[in-house]
Image (cartoon, rainbow, N blue to C red; front, side, top):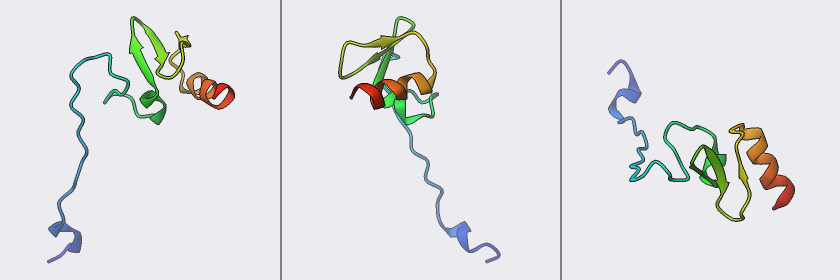
Length: 68
């Protein structure tokens, strides 16, 4: 037993996506994408009609922090 952690399995979360228009994408790392749906080259906020062309996480976070 050289490594005491070798007995523990490494758990990695997996997400099964049915459609590409889900609000959470496995290729995106920021938590902000949970609140937006990507559709037709735009990000739509799930809780109001606002949408953005810019995919910057800063822009999306600003919307949530300033408007909600």
